[in-house]
Image 1 (cartoon, rainbow, N blue to C red):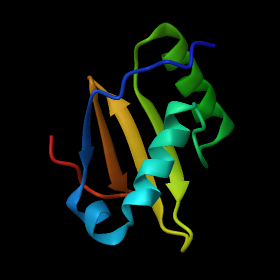
Image 2 (tube, rainbow, N blue to C red):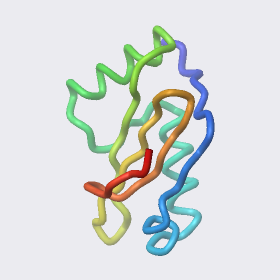
Image 3 (cartoon, rainbow, N blue to C red):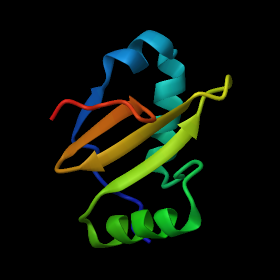
Image 4 (cartoon, helix red, strand yellow):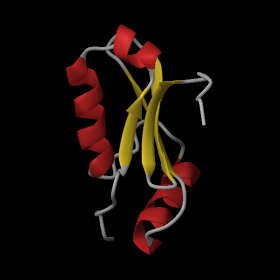
Length: 91
């Protein structure tokens, strides 16, 4: 599988910036770029792998902080957003 995909513009929500250490975010982004999708289910991981392979489509992952807080990384339409699970994202 081609493990190269572009993050595009990276958007980190205000809540994530307030709640998480920079290292938590950067470590998750590094895993994401290695196609480590965190704690998503097998079906979603397969969809991500396919999107990376064809170079199109939505890619998303879910990770937990050491305190157990979930957060998402989502790439679509040439931008990547890092947000808390369930957080509303401005378009």
